Amino acid sequence: MIKPYLMFNRECDEAFKVYQKAFDGEMVAIQKYGDMPPSPDFPVAEDDKNLVLHAELKITETGFILGSDYRQDLQSDGKVCISVELNSEESAIKAWNVLKDNGTVHMDLQPTFFAKLHGSVMDKFGVTWMFTVS
View (cartoon, helix red, strand yellow):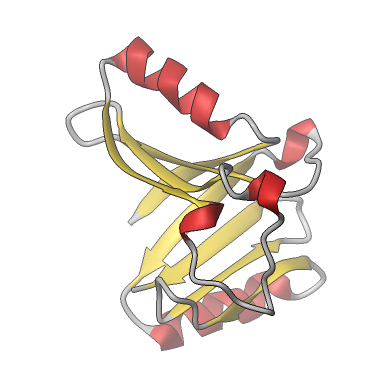
């Protein structure tokens, strides 16, 4: 499944409320950075705890948008990611290795508290891909 993933500079919550109003959408999920289990590998500053870690908004019968606050400044060309949800770790690793060649890894493909594998990479063409294996 492929869904657009919108990245924000600290305004995801506000933006998704506007999108929800515009489309009479249904907020399917919203998690804040403060909801994460504490981890020394990913410390969250007190000022960042209310930022959106992950939001999912249903805007049409079958259409969804996803979003998150990025904890560093994004240029306008870095605000949209292609979120790819795959069924197998092997498929994710294969695609990951192809796309990271001459690209930039934003977050290593690794196990997380919410997925078997998750990671983000910008390919050599400037397209950011976010992989999740549930």
